[in-house]
Image (tube, rainbow, N blue to C red; front, side, top):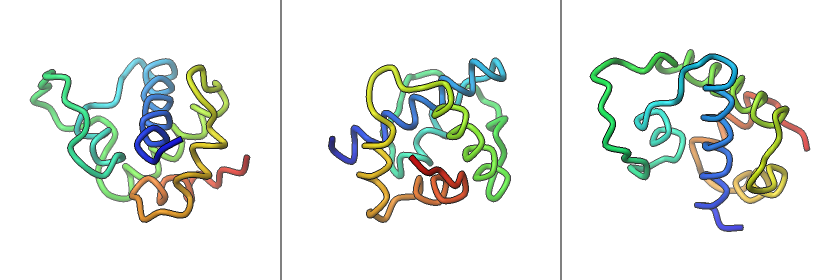
Length: 104
């Protein structure tokens, strides 16, 4: 699994968990922050700030989504492998992984 595939798997799982548990999907800008670059561009412009907050609040909420995503289970890949791939790199999503205290 590549770093890109690992990020996509985790972010897609978090987006699924967000919608399933709250009825609100992640905005493309949220996914891009998690990805660490401009990767997601659906063309959907909300014109509203992200409902997931900013700064520390965003990290806390994303960590919660990551825990939910893992509990709901991956349907298109292996979270343990994805987390292992990303754990050693310099990625923003590592802050979320650490905050979520994920152990697989």
